[in-house]
Figure 1 (tube, rainbow, N blue to C red):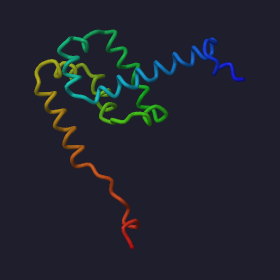
Figure 2: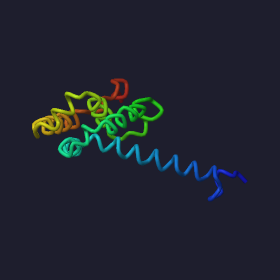
Figure 3: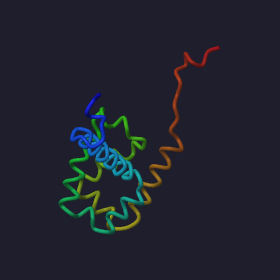
Figure 4: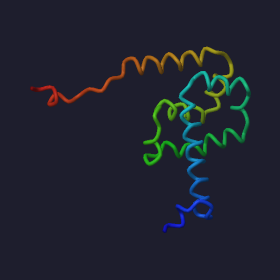
Length: 124
């Protein structure tokens, strides 16, 4: 019997903790796809806290291929990259215009994005 599968063993506890952390960070990164959530973070001055800025830098590992494959909302990775810049964080806080611009760009992307099949798939 594999000790990592037995509840209560140190190895299974570590695996459970790692899985919980992975899921928590995945959920948080994906929430960054929501412009209204970003605006809320800015309005609460969370985006100005050095600890939070460091956390955003830490989360950049989600852009790596091994992790990015779990992301359902690719816009989240784009927003994570934008949040690395102080100017972007300041614009989010300044007014709702940046939030609305992000929201519109996201909507336009989803509205016009399509999967184009190769022409070889279209032949009878």
